Length: 274
Ligand code: KIV
Image (cartoon, rainbow, N blue to C red; front, side, top):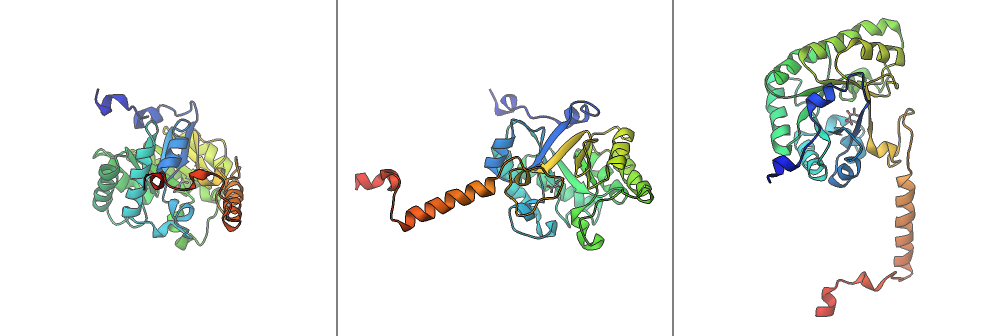
């Protein structure tokens, strides 16, 4: 039996059918082991450019390159077998023109095997999203707080608290749907507007800091596991992995200093054969 017939991942059309139904569960992850841990429970694993902060110790996502993303995408594909894998398009790889976006999206899909891409932008990205979707590239859109624009906006600010901001966000949401996006991330959007966008759109809305009113939710897996130095207020920590790692490394360091080896296996078996 071919690999093709034994591995069946969740598909883009299946995600579309979840509009208004069972919530879509998504996590951003970047490595093969983490992809393996989350795979049984998520519908979508996003290879997010938030790897910049979570993995590479950068302050913003602007430093991520296409090659970085491809490496993370290949690792996540190796670790997972069930989830739909979506690749974030990093800063500078899609804004210039639909043609440049197409070329780079092709690299992301061809070199990783992922099924879709995500890019930030609304009305300004309408033509690009249409260009990609008309040529076989499923696109998840991302509106509201857009981390790649942080140098323009001056910070990570929630949007839609004031009704005066609603028309432009509504226009963004309509534009990405009309362009053919199969879903849209709503990041940092006040609840009443997130609820309205979710009611108005025919594609699933995936919220992050945008309330429970969305059709699904996404988080950075490191944040919910308590591995990040800083997490946004809306994140509930489900574990304290930082504390567990700290305790384990501290114990190991103490054992080493005391010349205490917990087990005889602290030598390679090949020693016996020498
Ligand atoms: O890069 C990322 O992880 C994201 C999600 C958090 C939406 O864009």
